[in-house]
Length: 353
Image 1 (cartoon, rainbow, N blue to C red):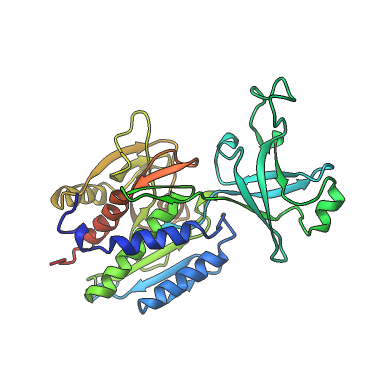
Image 2 (cartoon, rainbow, N blue to C red):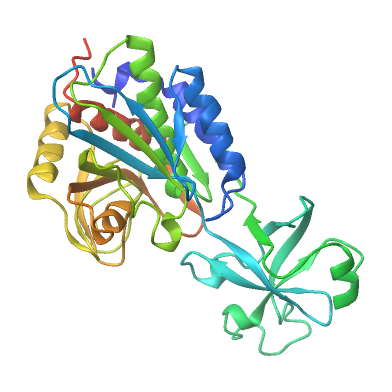
Protein backbone atom coordinates (compact mmCIF):
# COMPACT_ATOMS: atom_id res chain seq x y z
CA UNK A 1 0.00 0.00 0.00
CA UNK A 2 1.41 3.37 -1.01
CA UNK A 3 1.24 6.13 1.59
CA UNK A 4 2.35 9.73 1.44
CA UNK A 5 5.59 8.77 3.18
CA UNK A 6 6.74 5.67 1.29
CA UNK A 7 5.63 7.14 -2.05
CA UNK A 8 8.38 9.76 -1.71
CA UNK A 9 11.07 7.08 -1.75
CA UNK A 10 12.66 5.94 -5.01
CA UNK A 11 11.47 2.33 -5.11
CA UNK A 12 13.19 1.63 -8.44
CA UNK A 13 16.53 2.84 -7.08
CA UNK A 14 16.25 0.75 -3.88
CA UNK A 15 15.43 -2.50 -5.67
CA UNK A 16 17.97 -1.87 -8.43
CA UNK A 17 20.74 -1.38 -5.87
CA UNK A 18 19.60 -4.46 -3.96
CA UNK A 19 19.79 -6.55 -7.14
CA UNK A 20 23.38 -5.43 -7.66
CA UNK A 21 24.47 -5.96 -4.05
CA UNK A 22 23.01 -9.46 -3.90
CA UNK A 23 25.27 -10.53 -6.77
CA UNK A 24 28.52 -9.38 -5.12
CA UNK A 25 30.06 -12.16 -2.96
CA UNK A 26 30.56 -10.94 0.62
CA UNK A 27 30.77 -13.61 3.34
CA UNK A 28 31.83 -12.18 6.72
CA UNK A 29 35.41 -10.93 6.51
CA UNK A 30 35.39 -10.96 2.68
CA UNK A 31 33.62 -7.67 2.02
CA UNK A 32 36.27 -5.68 0.15
CA UNK A 33 34.50 -5.56 -3.24
CA UNK A 34 31.06 -4.74 -1.92
CA UNK A 35 32.36 -2.04 0.42
CA UNK A 36 34.22 -0.42 -2.46
CA UNK A 37 30.95 -0.43 -4.42
CA UNK A 38 29.10 1.23 -1.53
CA UNK A 39 31.85 3.83 -1.17
CA UNK A 40 31.27 4.74 -4.83
CA UNK A 41 27.51 4.92 -4.26
CA UNK A 42 27.91 7.24 -1.26
CA UNK A 43 30.23 9.49 -3.29
CA UNK A 44 27.59 9.70 -6.01
CA UNK A 45 25.36 11.48 -3.49
CA UNK A 46 28.14 13.72 -2.22
CA UNK A 47 29.00 11.77 0.93
CA UNK A 48 32.18 10.04 2.07
CA UNK A 49 32.13 6.57 3.60
CA UNK A 50 34.90 6.39 6.17
CA UNK A 51 36.31 2.98 7.05
CA UNK A 52 37.04 1.73 10.55
CA UNK A 53 40.19 -0.34 11.08
CA UNK A 54 38.23 -3.60 10.98
CA UNK A 55 36.39 -2.64 7.80
CA UNK A 56 33.02 -1.21 8.76
CA UNK A 57 31.81 1.85 6.85
CA UNK A 58 30.45 5.08 8.35
CA UNK A 59 28.59 7.71 6.31
CA UNK A 60 27.95 10.92 8.26
CA UNK A 61 25.07 13.27 7.38
CA UNK A 62 25.56 16.47 9.41
CA UNK A 63 22.60 17.70 11.45
CA UNK A 64 21.07 21.15 11.16
CA UNK A 65 20.52 21.60 14.90
CA UNK A 66 22.82 22.45 17.82
CA UNK A 67 22.89 18.96 19.38
CA UNK A 68 26.26 17.21 19.55
CA UNK A 69 24.55 13.85 19.97
CA UNK A 70 24.18 11.68 16.87
CA UNK A 71 21.75 8.96 15.88
CA UNK A 72 22.96 5.93 13.93
CA UNK A 73 21.25 3.49 11.59
CA UNK A 74 23.21 0.30 10.94
CA UNK A 75 22.80 -2.61 8.52
CA UNK A 76 25.23 -5.36 7.63
CA UNK A 77 26.52 -6.23 4.19
CA UNK A 78 28.30 -9.45 5.22
CA UNK A 79 26.59 -12.74 4.54
CA UNK A 80 26.70 -16.42 5.32
CA UNK A 81 29.31 -18.48 3.51
CA UNK A 82 32.09 -20.94 4.24
CA UNK A 83 35.84 -21.40 4.30
CA UNK A 84 37.95 -24.26 3.02
CA UNK A 85 38.88 -26.36 6.05
CA UNK A 86 40.96 -28.97 4.24
CA UNK A 87 41.56 -30.64 0.89
CA UNK A 88 40.52 -34.29 0.95
CA UNK A 89 42.53 -37.13 -0.62
CA UNK A 90 39.97 -37.33 -3.46
CA UNK A 91 40.43 -33.64 -4.33
CA UNK A 92 37.13 -32.59 -2.76
CA UNK A 93 37.02 -29.75 -0.23
CA UNK A 94 35.90 -30.01 3.36
CA UNK A 95 34.42 -26.74 4.58
CA UNK A 96 33.74 -24.89 7.80
CA UNK A 97 30.73 -22.55 7.94
CA UNK A 98 30.88 -18.76 8.19
CA UNK A 99 27.79 -17.74 10.14
CA UNK A 100 25.04 -19.83 11.65
CA UNK A 101 22.99 -22.01 9.30
CA UNK A 102 21.92 -25.61 8.92
CA UNK A 103 24.04 -27.57 6.45
CA UNK A 104 20.98 -28.97 4.69
CA UNK A 105 20.12 -25.43 3.51
CA UNK A 106 23.21 -25.37 1.24
CA UNK A 107 23.17 -28.95 0.01
CA UNK A 108 23.14 -28.91 -3.79
CA UNK A 109 24.04 -25.23 -3.93
CA UNK A 110 26.45 -23.85 -6.52
CA UNK A 111 29.32 -21.89 -5.04
CA UNK A 112 32.55 -20.02 -5.78
CA UNK A 113 35.89 -20.76 -4.13
CA UNK A 114 37.94 -17.55 -3.84
CA UNK A 115 41.69 -18.20 -3.60
CA UNK A 116 44.10 -15.85 -1.85
CA UNK A 117 45.76 -14.97 -5.16
CA UNK A 118 42.50 -13.82 -6.75
CA UNK A 119 41.41 -16.90 -8.68
CA UNK A 120 37.85 -18.24 -8.57
CA UNK A 121 36.60 -21.78 -9.11
CA UNK A 122 33.02 -22.96 -9.39
CA UNK A 123 31.78 -25.88 -7.36
CA UNK A 124 28.77 -27.58 -5.79
CA UNK A 125 28.08 -28.34 -2.12
CA UNK A 126 27.16 -31.99 -1.67
CA UNK A 127 26.68 -34.64 0.96
CA UNK A 128 29.50 -37.18 1.07
CA UNK A 129 26.81 -39.74 0.26
CA UNK A 130 25.56 -38.08 -2.89
CA UNK A 131 23.26 -40.61 -4.52
CA UNK A 132 20.48 -42.95 -3.41
CA UNK A 133 21.55 -45.20 -6.27
CA UNK A 134 24.87 -45.81 -4.55
CA UNK A 135 24.41 -45.35 -0.82
CA UNK A 136 21.46 -47.10 0.88
CA UNK A 137 21.57 -44.67 3.82
CA UNK A 138 21.89 -41.50 1.69
CA UNK A 139 18.47 -40.20 2.76
CA UNK A 140 19.26 -40.59 6.46
CA UNK A 141 22.87 -39.39 6.29
CA UNK A 142 23.18 -36.49 8.71
CA UNK A 143 23.82 -33.16 7.04
CA UNK A 144 26.62 -31.84 9.24
CA UNK A 145 30.03 -30.33 8.56
CA UNK A 146 31.95 -33.63 8.56
CA UNK A 147 29.51 -35.15 6.05
CA UNK A 148 29.55 -32.31 3.50
CA UNK A 149 32.04 -31.40 0.79
CA UNK A 150 32.54 -29.24 -2.28
CA UNK A 151 32.94 -30.84 -5.69
CA UNK A 152 35.12 -28.48 -7.77
CA UNK A 153 34.34 -28.06 -11.47
CA UNK A 154 37.90 -28.73 -12.54
CA UNK A 155 39.83 -31.86 -13.60
CA UNK A 156 40.95 -32.95 -10.16
CA UNK A 157 40.69 -36.25 -8.34
CA UNK A 158 43.45 -35.89 -5.76
CA UNK A 159 44.65 -33.53 -3.08
CA UNK A 160 47.77 -32.72 -5.13
CA UNK A 161 45.77 -31.79 -8.22
CA UNK A 162 43.51 -29.49 -6.22
CA UNK A 163 46.51 -27.84 -4.56
CA UNK A 164 47.96 -27.14 -8.01
CA UNK A 165 44.86 -25.05 -8.72
CA UNK A 166 46.00 -22.71 -5.95
CA UNK A 167 43.23 -23.76 -3.57
CA UNK A 168 44.23 -23.98 0.09
CA UNK A 169 42.74 -24.08 3.58
CA UNK A 170 41.44 -20.64 4.54
CA UNK A 171 40.06 -19.81 1.10
CA UNK A 172 36.60 -18.22 1.23
CA UNK A 173 33.52 -19.88 -0.28
CA UNK A 174 30.46 -17.89 -1.37
CA UNK A 175 27.03 -19.26 -2.30
CA UNK A 176 25.23 -18.58 -5.56
CA UNK A 177 22.58 -16.05 -4.40
CA UNK A 178 20.03 -17.14 -7.06
CA UNK A 179 18.47 -13.67 -7.25
CA UNK A 180 14.91 -13.36 -8.55
CA UNK A 181 13.09 -10.01 -8.52
CA UNK A 182 9.54 -10.49 -9.75
CA UNK A 183 7.21 -7.94 -11.32
CA UNK A 184 4.62 -8.57 -8.60
CA UNK A 185 7.00 -7.27 -5.91
CA UNK A 186 8.42 -10.52 -4.56
CA UNK A 187 12.16 -10.65 -4.05
CA UNK A 188 13.75 -14.04 -3.43
CA UNK A 189 17.44 -14.65 -2.99
CA UNK A 190 20.05 -15.74 -0.54
CA UNK A 191 21.49 -12.93 1.56
CA UNK A 192 18.41 -10.70 1.83
CA UNK A 193 19.74 -10.86 5.37
CA UNK A 194 20.88 -8.16 5.34
CA UNK A 195 21.39 -6.63 1.92
CA UNK A 196 17.70 -5.69 1.78
CA UNK A 197 18.29 -3.40 4.75
CA UNK A 198 21.47 -1.94 3.23
CA UNK A 199 19.44 -1.05 0.13
CA UNK A 200 16.82 0.59 2.38
CA UNK A 201 19.52 2.75 4.04
CA UNK A 202 20.83 3.88 0.68
CA UNK A 203 17.26 4.59 -0.40
CA UNK A 204 17.11 6.98 2.54
CA UNK A 205 20.46 8.51 1.48
CA UNK A 206 19.14 8.97 -2.08
CA UNK A 207 16.03 10.71 -0.66
CA UNK A 208 18.14 13.12 1.41
CA UNK A 209 20.23 14.04 -1.64
CA UNK A 210 17.23 14.41 -3.98
CA UNK A 211 15.14 16.52 -1.61
CA UNK A 212 17.97 18.55 -0.08
CA UNK A 213 16.58 17.81 3.40
CA UNK A 214 18.83 17.66 6.44
CA UNK A 215 18.10 15.87 9.71
CA UNK A 216 18.13 17.98 12.85
CA UNK A 217 20.54 15.61 14.56
CA UNK A 218 23.63 14.26 12.89
CA UNK A 219 22.85 10.89 11.29
CA UNK A 220 25.45 8.17 10.85
CA UNK A 221 24.78 5.26 8.50
CA UNK A 222 26.98 2.36 9.60
CA UNK A 223 27.61 -0.58 7.28
CA UNK A 224 28.78 -3.60 9.23
CA UNK A 225 31.00 -6.37 7.85
CA UNK A 226 31.08 -8.99 10.64
CA UNK A 227 27.48 -9.19 11.89
CA UNK A 228 26.94 -12.82 10.92
CA UNK A 229 29.76 -13.88 13.24
CA UNK A 230 28.57 -11.76 16.17
CA UNK A 231 30.86 -8.75 16.53
CA UNK A 232 29.96 -6.58 13.54
CA UNK A 233 29.00 -3.30 15.19
CA UNK A 234 30.61 -3.84 18.59
CA UNK A 235 32.41 -0.49 18.16
CA UNK A 236 30.32 2.70 18.08
CA UNK A 237 31.41 6.31 17.47
CA UNK A 238 31.42 8.18 20.77
CA UNK A 239 28.88 10.82 19.70
CA UNK A 240 26.15 8.23 18.97
CA UNK A 241 23.49 8.01 21.71
CA UNK A 242 20.72 6.24 19.75
CA UNK A 243 21.11 3.27 17.42
CA UNK A 244 18.56 1.55 15.20
CA UNK A 245 19.79 -1.75 13.86
CA UNK A 246 18.14 -2.46 10.52
CA UNK A 247 18.02 -6.19 9.95
CA UNK A 248 15.56 -8.77 8.68
CA UNK A 249 12.44 -9.69 10.59
CA UNK A 250 12.03 -13.46 10.82
CA UNK A 251 8.82 -15.32 9.99
CA UNK A 252 7.44 -18.51 11.52
CA UNK A 253 5.37 -20.07 14.30
CA UNK A 254 4.30 -17.72 17.09
CA UNK A 255 5.41 -14.69 15.04
CA UNK A 256 3.26 -11.95 13.49
CA UNK A 257 5.59 -10.50 10.83
CA UNK A 258 4.89 -11.21 7.16
CA UNK A 259 6.99 -10.59 4.06
CA UNK A 260 5.11 -7.35 3.41
CA UNK A 261 5.69 -5.88 6.88
CA UNK A 262 8.38 -3.85 8.50
CA UNK A 263 9.21 -5.85 11.61
CA UNK A 264 9.69 -4.04 14.91
CA UNK A 265 11.53 -6.28 17.36
CA UNK A 266 10.70 -5.64 21.01
CA UNK A 267 13.07 -8.31 22.38
CA UNK A 268 15.58 -10.84 21.08
CA UNK A 269 18.16 -13.18 22.63
CA UNK A 270 20.06 -10.19 24.07
CA UNK A 271 16.99 -8.92 25.95
CA UNK A 272 14.48 -6.10 25.44
CA UNK A 273 15.24 -3.13 23.22
CA UNK A 274 14.74 0.44 24.41
CA UNK A 275 11.12 0.86 25.42
CA UNK A 276 10.69 4.49 24.35
CA UNK A 277 12.39 4.05 20.98
CA UNK A 278 10.38 0.93 20.21
CA UNK A 279 7.13 2.64 21.25
CA UNK A 280 7.90 5.62 19.04
CA UNK A 281 8.59 3.37 16.06
CA UNK A 282 5.25 1.63 16.57
CA UNK A 283 3.39 4.94 16.77
CA UNK A 284 5.12 6.28 13.66
CA UNK A 285 4.22 3.14 11.71
CA UNK A 286 0.58 3.62 12.75
CA UNK A 287 0.63 7.35 12.00
CA UNK A 288 2.01 6.86 8.49
CA UNK A 289 -0.10 3.75 7.77
CA UNK A 290 2.92 1.54 7.17
CA UNK A 291 2.38 -2.22 7.35
CA UNK A 292 4.19 -3.38 10.47
CA UNK A 293 4.29 -6.10 13.13
CA UNK A 294 5.83 -6.28 16.59
CA UNK A 295 7.56 -9.54 17.46
CA UNK A 296 9.87 -11.33 19.88
CA UNK A 297 12.88 -13.17 18.41
CA UNK A 298 14.40 -15.48 21.06
CA UNK A 299 16.89 -17.10 18.61
CA UNK A 300 18.11 -13.79 17.17
CA UNK A 301 20.84 -11.24 17.80
CA UNK A 302 21.62 -8.00 15.99
CA UNK A 303 24.30 -5.37 15.55
CA UNK A 304 22.50 -3.40 18.25
CA UNK A 305 23.14 -6.37 20.57
CA UNK A 306 26.82 -6.32 19.55
CA UNK A 307 27.07 -2.58 20.27
CA UNK A 308 25.52 -2.95 23.71
CA UNK A 309 27.67 -5.95 24.60
CA UNK A 310 30.70 -4.02 23.35
CA UNK A 311 30.09 -1.44 26.09
CA UNK A 312 28.36 1.33 24.11
CA UNK A 313 26.33 3.66 26.32
CA UNK A 314 23.39 3.97 23.93
CA UNK A 315 19.70 3.36 23.52
CA UNK A 316 18.93 0.84 20.81
CA UNK A 317 16.06 -0.52 18.73
CA UNK A 318 15.69 -3.07 15.94
CA UNK A 319 13.53 -3.01 12.79
CA UNK A 320 13.69 -4.49 9.30
CA UNK A 321 11.80 -6.04 6.40
CA UNK A 322 10.07 -9.36 7.03
CA UNK A 323 12.05 -12.22 5.47
CA UNK A 324 10.77 -15.78 5.11
CA UNK A 325 13.12 -18.79 5.48
CA UNK A 326 15.93 -16.77 7.05
CA UNK A 327 19.43 -18.25 6.63
CA UNK A 328 18.04 -20.49 3.88
CA UNK A 329 16.30 -19.63 0.58
CA UNK A 330 14.98 -16.26 1.68
CA UNK A 331 12.09 -14.21 0.33
CA UNK A 332 10.68 -10.76 1.06
CA UNK A 333 8.54 -8.18 -0.73
CA UNK A 334 9.38 -4.76 -2.13
CA UNK A 335 6.71 -3.28 0.15
CA UNK A 336 8.55 -4.43 3.28
CA UNK A 337 11.88 -2.98 2.13
CA UNK A 338 10.37 0.39 1.16
CA UNK A 339 8.31 0.55 4.36
CA UNK A 340 11.48 -0.05 6.36
CA UNK A 341 13.14 2.92 4.66
CA UNK A 342 9.97 4.97 5.21
CA UNK A 343 9.89 4.21 8.95
CA UNK A 344 13.55 5.22 9.26
CA UNK A 345 12.72 8.46 7.46
CA UNK A 346 9.78 9.11 9.79
CA UNK A 347 11.97 8.55 12.85
CA UNK A 348 14.18 11.45 11.74
CA UNK A 349 11.17 13.76 12.01
CA UNK A 350 11.67 15.28 8.57
CA UNK A 351 8.85 17.01 6.66
CA UNK A 352 8.25 14.93 3.52
CA UNK A 353 5.76 17.29 1.87
